[in-house]
Length: 375
Ligand SMILES: Nc1ncnc2c1ncn2[C@@H]1O[C@H](COP(=O)(O)OP(=O)(O)OP(=O)(O)O)[C@@H](O)[C@H]1O
Ligand SMILES: [Mg+2]
Image (cartoon, rainbow, N blue to C red):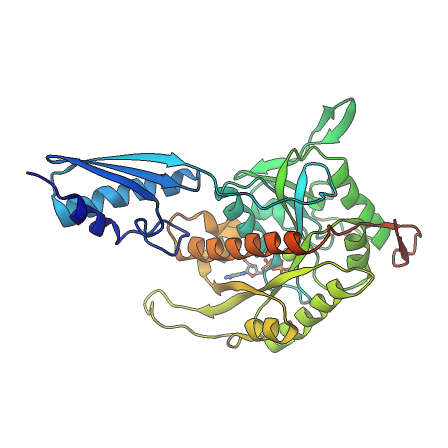
């Protein structure tokens, strides 16, 4: 039995690698196909070191060749990984941390924390070094979403200074205001106190090198947000909204807050969460429970990028409660949706860094929390 190289290549065109729109031949991932009688060797170049993506690609290749070409073919897949170019870092404001991205919304409960957790694991799977700073002083969610509720950061010695060591879960470094407060205890935070605690979690912590630090903000656009944001050199903000009118009105306020001249944080874009619902038994139907494309239209109206949409999926909610972000579910629609979203966040961050100078942190100089002056 002599296998035909061209036939194999065209069979491989039916496979796409998770997170890539093009098939593996078109995208250039298939570097070479060699045949010797009934043996096939496929050389594959991947841009992600994620084990499940490598495994999936190998399994798919073997399956397609067995099904479409010859069921007894001896298939060998050689995989080489070459990481994609990292975003260019310009004028970093905190040593070691390249991009700080604030995840916000005007309205509560629209899915900021869910988006933060899933984006974080997706970026980590893409090969980036990722940290999450849970700044939600009203209701920190990251300890639950990453299943590290019982963890307490330890202190480590870095160049003679003692620093907090973030907790690592699913390859993401995490610090949360929740690690330092008891869940039953209502802590009443004032702006400067919250800003101080967050400053410590950034500057007095041993984050190591990070490509992205995602900051999960509390809901709203109040004084506390001003304090938090003015004290951190935030590279850019993403605003999460559902397509519903009440959420959109608040998202608009969120965008305005970042663009306010005393904050001046570039808005990387708007994310539409809970965009639609597709029942499992009717996979081709989309039900627009909260309205259709509201956040997309808002992005257009405000002239800020639309970063993408995430549907309502039961497993997203369940995974959040269970403590394993749903985007980790291999080859799932949820994983693909977050990969697409993560790619736009990376693209917009790169664009922002190419076009704008780094954001300056503003030093809070009064205890009132709102009045602030530039450093
Ligand atoms: N796309 C989705 N599909 C299904 N459930 C979702 C989705 N996004 C969020 N949820 C669920 O909605 C609820 C609210 O989400 P989440 O806690 O992420 O919102 P939030 O904006 O961070 O809320 P808060 O303002 O309280 O911080 C959670 O139970 C979460 O699991
Ligand atoms: Mg939250």
